[in-house]
Image (cartoon, rainbow, N blue to C red; front, side, top):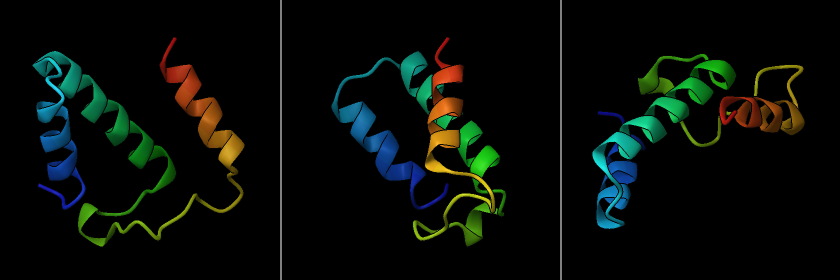
Length: 68
């Protein structure tokens, strides 16, 4: 399990989110990671940014498109 995934799981469990909701959140975070940070999980850090040419607006557009 990646260092960022475990705390996210613990937080969702503490908040009492349903297991299906937790799975959905983790899937969407994984999709965002795959889209904007195409690195192996062991090399992923919080300091890694968007791919060259992507803007924060691109990221927001992607997130919103996933929620429809």
